[in-house]
Length: 123
Image 1 (spheres, one colour):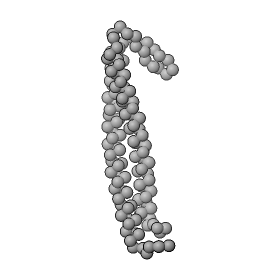
Image 2: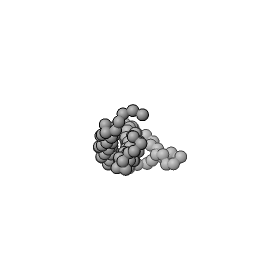
Image 3: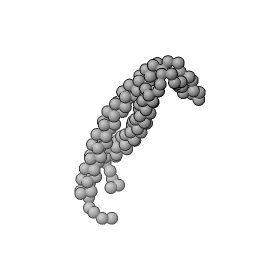
Image 4: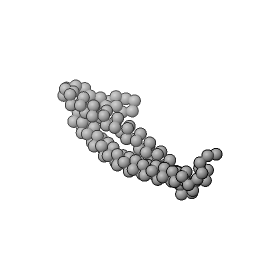
């Protein structure tokens, strides 16, 4: 096992890089999914709020009273659409990385299996 071909070493390095990329993309997607749920919940609450209610928007560490409820709703819907596009892009990227990850894993396993069958067993 000490004598691994340069090609196999390269595949192992690629495998590790793809694994890291996959973890990163999955984490980003998880965060955006959470943001999406929060945004949907906010839109639901906004729709359920009576017209004469005061609405505040968080700006930095301040809450600012908003005069135009429809403008806030429109801004939130635009942000939601943008988030949906970003999530779909991350899903495609995640799918591609998973396929590459599995392909490299199978290739590495085959190479290791072939090298262990060709060499004598033992110490």
